[in-house]
Length: 230
Image (cartoon, rainbow, N blue to C red):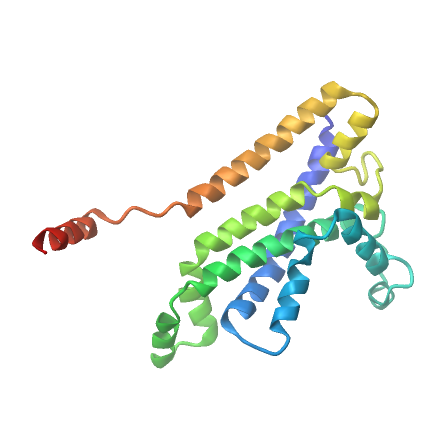
């Protein structure tokens, strides 16, 4: 088992998940609760990593993070072929899942509840934090889990922007590829099992969140009585 690769993957995933939430949640709220010119174009661009090949995403990141890039020149930060570049790649591929799931959950929150809070004098921030987000929390948590799982499993774009340096930039998916190339199948099998177990737990949790909650006993009895009364 390649423990340094596993530890690096967990670090990269943790940071990427934080960025996915920090960036994805405001974007999801914006797309779900506002309407503006160019919204469809923006949403399409944000969801492109879901359909683009990892090599294409990696190439775009090479252009964005490479020498001469306006972003790099402005920030004066060189992260290409280092582990922070893996965080950027993981964030880019996981962000669309967070946006998609959270947007759907926020859009399903009844706007009348928010309007009622406004008439009572609640601020927009209070409405978002006390009404919108709590009611949409199941979809938001599902987006976080799916985005984090996608970030953990990212391979193609990560390999292009970080290389394959054991102990420095080699994440677990890259280590699995390296083990197969070197015909170290025992190591590859163990790492694959670890990745599969993590993915299974994440998807199982999402499925649990998607299951409808049973109605409270009193409410269910009231509904049954209403039906029988009819």
